[in-house]
Length: 119
View 1 (tube, rainbow, N blue to C red):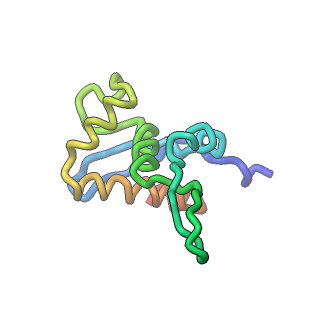
View 2 (tube, rainbow, N blue to C red):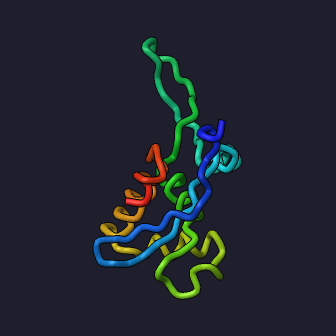
C-alpha cells in the first residue's frame, strides 16, 4: 500500500517573520539509524525502592537530528555546513525562533496528509 510509505518530498514552511525553510521528513529507517544518538539511559527507582535503568528519548538530541533534515534555511552557506556545524548555528538562534522552527518540523512530522503539511 502506497499510504504506508513516507513522503520524502521537501516540505517548505515559513516562519512568522517570512523566513523560508525546507524540510525532508524522516523515514522510519532514518529514525532507527539515529536511535543510538537520541536514546539515553535513565536511572529510576521502582515501587520497592530498587534502582533500575530504562531507555528514554532525549528531546534535545531529537531536535538536533530533526534539524539535520532541514534542506533549506536562510542562513549563509547552509548546505555547505556539516551536521555539527548546522547544530552549532541553531544553538545560537533566539529561543523563540528555534522553538518556532521545531514546532513547524513537528507539525510536518505529525501531519497525516500532504495537504496538511503544505499549509
